[in-house]
Length: 198
Image 1 (cartoon, rainbow, N blue to C red):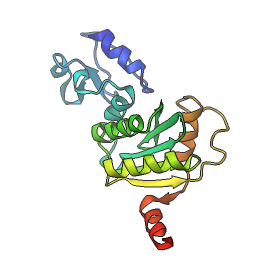
Image 2: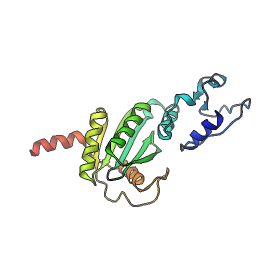
Image 3: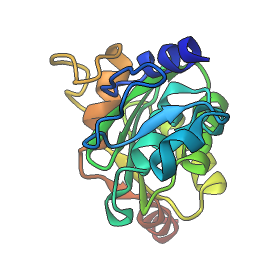
């Protein structure tokens, strides 16, 4: 079990310290991650690895949710549409990481899973407008799947250049990270203005 816990933690961007059974726990540690059968040894701050998702991105969010005040659990997601869709996720002001998908359904599924599994106080999804057809498909699918989310379409010019982000990632993920912090037009506003034009 020890190696399972450590290997899963290594796939996140969290710093951790490994301790052996019987070794005293540092009272300054924020959280103890262990197996369900040993959680009782560490008291109320212990989290069982079996209760966490296998996806490193989701697991990291689940762990951070235990360390953040409820008001600071803002979930911010940037999406760079195209033939390869980049996804970047920020939680409580921290970059969790990103993924890349080849389909709208895959991207929407990844976002929905993250939203369902990670406790959050607010949710904002920003989608780049560089591929209009893809961005509109993503926006509509996400609105249908996550009706309470704030969804914005963002001008993504210049987002594909620059250096790596804190969590690294490929070019699409880095572009998605930049998109996440741009001001955009909310999807509801776009829908209303389209009706007015018609």
